[in-house]
Image 1 (cartoon, rainbow, N blue to C red):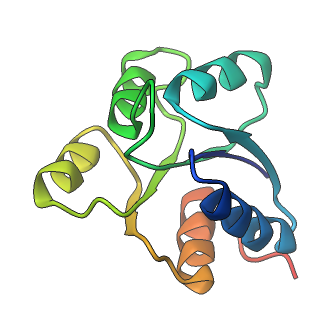
Image 2 (image 1 turned 90 degrees about the vertical axis):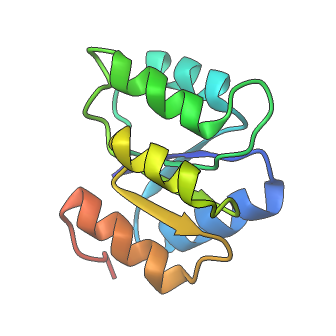
Length: 125
């Protein structure tokens, strides 16, 4: 499975990448929502996006809104993975169709469980 990590923090990206790739997933990276939209246009094999909320140029909720407004990406699964935990943003993400909302720091087992639930697969060991 191909997972696009949309995150501006290098350490968070690398940690997430290692966890996912150890389970056999292929990862790509975008540093913000605009870059994520560009990645989607050139790579049609993305199965899931893991998205931070706070990013420069286009935040994660704006990205999620744009995806849901699009006919091409409206059903693309999205997991929000962020330090932002206020109820207003969690509710907004849920209304926009986010599959899971994880608050950092996220334990690797929790991340993998949510990825497996969304993709309908079990861990590739």
